Length: 272
Ligand code: NAP
Ligand code: COA
Image 1 (cartoon, protein in one colour):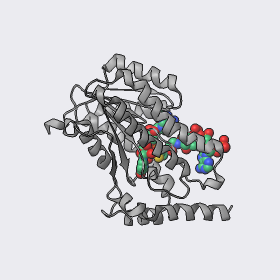
Image 2 (tube, helix red, strand yellow):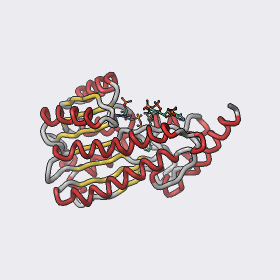
Image 3 (tube, helix red, strand yellow):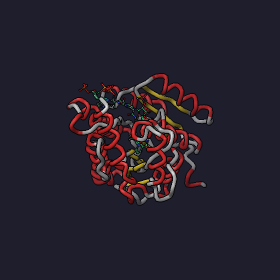
Image 4 (cartoon, helix red, strand yellow):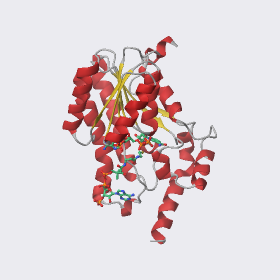
């Protein structure tokens, strides 16, 4: 479809070297974009850039921890010098592990806040001067925990709720620059690191799928397709939206995920 042709567009996906975000990077590459990805590990960056080249795309990558503003700025400068202004910016670096609040250390809470929330701010602020104005589309990758409370996820809930407020505040501040800012909220996406950590057993995976009104877990493509839409002119009047792509899971309070996770962590604690 002509609207989903990203030829001659520059797309940057921070945290784009595995799972859902890599699926997003590959989808933009398959739709003609030049794509840059970033994450902490050189081998993951190299592997992803090679996969993007295989799709026929111009692609580059850089290593940065989103907690390190200078590293993010250095990497984005390289992308800007090579590929010009950013048409699409996806910010999805995140960390997660289940921990009951009473067992979570200050540093554990801080780690997730700094990756997900401060990291998102770093990516936004370091990109601002390099975004196409008017025309850029920013997509922040959020999570259901941002608005559905869950046992063993206090750190992630706090951080991702903040990410969605970054989205909504920047939609206000940057709207007059012609920059759109939206959040995408993936549901349970099969085969990802996030699900390996939150639904580690076949039983919990089956219960998770059962709790999705559409009756299945999602795929990275389900999320990527919505990102293509949000980045396209089809969504030219959409900004400040927090859009679940979750088969209806959040309408169903994430199918009782909170109780599975809480129970799993309580049992782990009892068993030492
Ligand atoms: P994933 O494969 O672990 O992806 C995380 C990405 O971020 C990787 O590329 C990772 O690469 C990078 N990253 C992590 N910490 C970083 C840091 N400090 N600085 C820079 N990059 C960093 O996880 P996923 O499950 O696909 O999740 C992707 C996104 O979707 C996350 O934002 C997550 O919150 C969201 N989400 C996932 C699900 C799900 O079902 N999986 C559901 C809802 C929301 P390096 O290790 O090389 O840094
Ligand atoms: N339960 C409780 N606390 C944990 C934990 C767990 N499973 N894993 C880490 N922590 C705590 C650590 O103990 C440490 O706190 P402490 O100093 O008080 O002991 C703190 O979190 C930071 O841990 P560290 O390993 O130094 O952090 P890091 O910056 O190297 O890694 C993480 C960040 C912990 C989020 C790591 O899991 C990660 O890199 N995740 C990225 C991939 C991911 O989570 N993908 C899913 C995305 S949804």
